[in-house]
Amino acid sequence: MSKKQQYTPGEFYWSFLLPKYWGIWIAIVFLMLLAILPWSIQHRLATWLGNLAFNKLKSRRKTTIRNLEVCFPEWTTEQVQENSRQVFIDMMIGVFETLNAWYSPKWFKNRVTIEGLEHITNAQAEGKGVLLLGTHSTLLDAGGYICAQYFDPDVVYRPQNNPLLDMLIYRCRATIYANQIDHDDMRGLIRHLKEGHAIWYSPDQDFGLKQGIMAPFFGTPAATVTAHRRLLKISKAVAVPLYFYRHGDINDPRYHILIEPAVEPMPSEDELDDATRVNKIIENQLRIAPTQYMWFHRRFKTRPEGYDKIY
Image 1: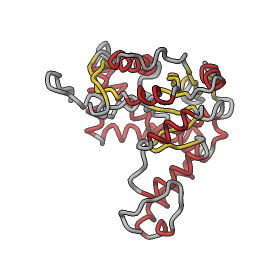
Image 2: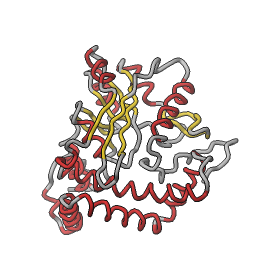
Image 3: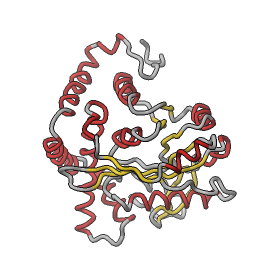
Image 4: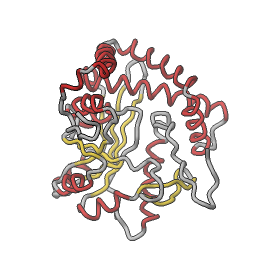
């Protein structure tokens, strides 16, 4: 198959058996074995790997520390360092939680609670689609799995560069999400919203100002995407904040899904006001479990003329 040829998401190709893909197949078998380990061992491995990543990934560590310094100025230097390290540990814990969701989902039985499900069901009962405003949580697809125990979520995803890895992840996610929508497939996204689907959408990263506007995030101006305003306007869907997080004893964790009332009015006539409101929603969510967020992304990357550089 030529490099220019397109791969169909989730479809197996015989070329995936070529030697260049053997490393991925071996890694997948290894990950499946990790998924059947007791949680006590998974947690210890995740902690070790998280500390290793914090020490070795210097650029990501620096970005995480700087993000936390900007967003939590009330924290001491020691608290910033401690929580930055915990971000990496939570990221690795999230990898194991995702493996459990894909290969050993029974592990989550009797561990999940939900609050505010009526905000989704009421909107859908009125024939409206629901755009779930979420975040890039370290829980990864484990968050999608626990949500799927209560309603049928669709997800917006970015395809992997490696076609075999993309196929494997797509198939694993197919056991969780009702539909997977390519981030470039705006027509498909709008169609699913018009059909009354609930779609998990995360407007919390910096994609520059071609797709957004500068709006305060934890009190600091940040490039904030505004595409959801157009999606909501065209589809007549409602925007409903969604957040899920781990809590309780790490040796016997529990998971909570928080669904808040629809944001009204959204979209309004003021683009900046809408972006500010969405950022504030995300802020409030992240304060619940600050280290369960991917702070190693450069949230304040875009700095137009007149704005101080963050990194």
